[in-house]
Image (tube, rainbow, N blue to C red; front, side, top):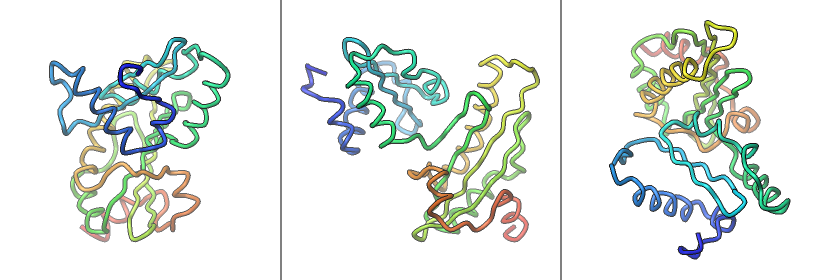
Length: 212
C-alpha cells in the first residue's frame, strides 16, 4: 500500500477507484491467467497487524468464510473503521453459514430480460438437496428477482466440501440468470423495504405458467 501511495480506508469511499485498484492488483498477480475477463471474481480485504491482506477468489462463499474474526486489528480505531465500511458496503449475495441459506437478488433492466432469464433455465429450479423460493420486485422501471436458497444437507453435520457442491450448483443456475441480468447492487432486505412487491414466494413458477 505504501509503494502505491494508497490509503485503503479512503479508497473505499470511491467505487470506481476501488474497482480500478483491485483489478490492477488482479492483473499483476494473475500470471497464469486463471482469472479470465468474464469470470465473477470476489475480493475481500482483511486488516492485519502490519497492514492488509487481500483475498481474490472465484468462490465468494469461500471468501465469506474468512472474516475479521480471524484477524488481529492494529487498533480499536481500525476495527471501528472496518465496521463502518461493512455497513456502508453491505453484502448482496448473502450466504448464512449457520442456517445454510443463500439469498441472491438479480436485477433485470426490463420485463423481457426477466422472462428471458427464466426461460434460459429451461427446467424447474429444483437442485438436489436445495429448496428455493423466488420473489419479484419492481423499482425505478427495473425488475428484481430475489432467489432464496435453503440447503438441506444429507448429514446432520455436513462438511464444507459437501456444502460447496450445492453452492456450485446454485452458481451454475445463477449464471443462466446473469446472461440477461446482473447481481443487484441493492440487497434483498432493501428491496423488501423500498421496492414494490409483484409476486411473492413463487415468482418463477407463476411467470413460467403465464409467459411460456
